Image (cartoon, rainbow, N blue to C red):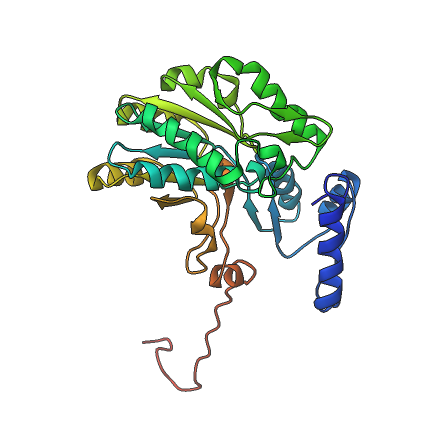
Length: 310
């Protein structure tokens, strides 16, 4: 992380790498955008980068000068679909955990939740209960809920809350001095209403969660496919036909069924984006492969075998 945004994290990461990893192979460089740009001017065997889609484009353009391969793990708005066959309480619990983990500042969090009309109102109430259960009725006082990492991030999130105040059904409490934003729910009565909101325009990267009532799965899939491809997609439900439609009619970096976020901790699964959410994958053996060049070698014996003329 850039030291001007999160100096403590930057300092700790640098200290641990210098302490435990061989300096012949691992080097830490801390700095701002000028340092970042200078590093991109160098010629590398491979570049691995995480960040926004714009950040990824900058890296990819710099890498193209030297035909350097890249692994880019970017972001995006990760959709979550809750079918009417879903376990309501379990889905609410897991979505609250995944959405507000690290104060919503993760690239794989459920960014917005599309809920079948038959259970949407009850789902909203279940999510409210789970938020209170996790963080108490005053999340500002709990040890289990963090703060926005930067003042810029706090102002951005507060701006969304002000713009969409009429749709807030839970939370909305903020404190600029401590960069606090309470877990906040927005409720929209249709996909079209949500699509017209400011929350639909970009990745939240904060403790804001939009819940959208849907009437037609086809409408939901059309909406998702009209957006940039997300890093992750989540589906809750027991209907295998609906699940199969979601899996086959959408494109995303990863999918998790009846849970969220946890797919990234399974080292048997590759993790990465597609389209605007990135390129390449890593984790477990896939990380080793990502940083390796597979060189083919053929050694032929010195015998007259398949030599011309045959």
